[in-house]
Image (cartoon, rainbow, N blue to C red; front, side, top):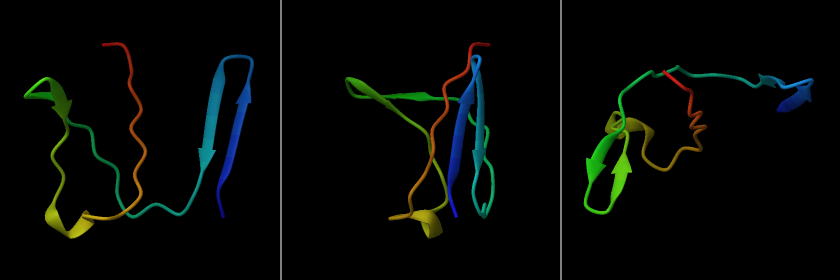
Length: 52
């Protein structure tokens, strides 16, 4: 079950989660990428960009 709530600039996301990754975005041609293990190929993913 997916639930997304935005209230007063606060973001809440509830969903069944397999794992969470925090990685650096690296250059890839004219774009960028985040590497994840092969076993997650084809899975749906959330990418949340945050200010350092």
